[in-house]
Image (cartoon, rainbow, N blue to C red):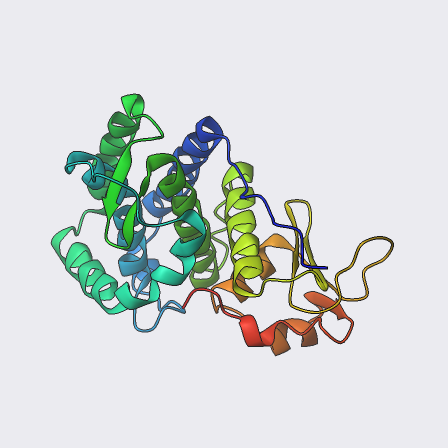
Length: 265
């Protein structure tokens, strides 16, 4: 029997908008308190410093305002679930743009303030169906904002990892949307129904080719927490290390997801 066709997950546009604004606000508040010594700390993103990473966060949400200012495309050509796999090709250009942005904006407070003002104003009246001409493809604003939760949550985690004790909080809706999009991306990359991946309390997906589970306890189960899942999906944590640290439980012959990870590079 072929696997049942999965429905594309839907997101509440109002909640996602609020989540993007809230998480950007969380990061902004933390960045305002960073000392000069903290801003020059290294990060796990190559040779980026904390200052460059903080500048990059503004760039990740400024794309919303900038793309809303551009002419609307005639049609969408990028599906939400394709976005995680379309970002790798842009990595070198993003790194160069980030360094230029950080160099041109020594006052991070002012950069965050202007970015927040433009974002809030841009989102005030823009419908979720409005198509955006992003560098990875054209897609509706409502879908693009879901991708911004990934950017914000992932880089919040990067900042927390770089600055001891920073502890930027995660907006619940932003963390949920990020977790779900990356879980669904796994199911798209490894279609099937033999393995159940659980990321409580936000996501459960069926994936990996093999005998389809229909009832009772699945023979292949992977379970982890949202931040560990996000780190695995984005290459911040290796599968073997997560298993060794007991951050992931995996049972069954098809529960090894290492061949499919990371999803985003």
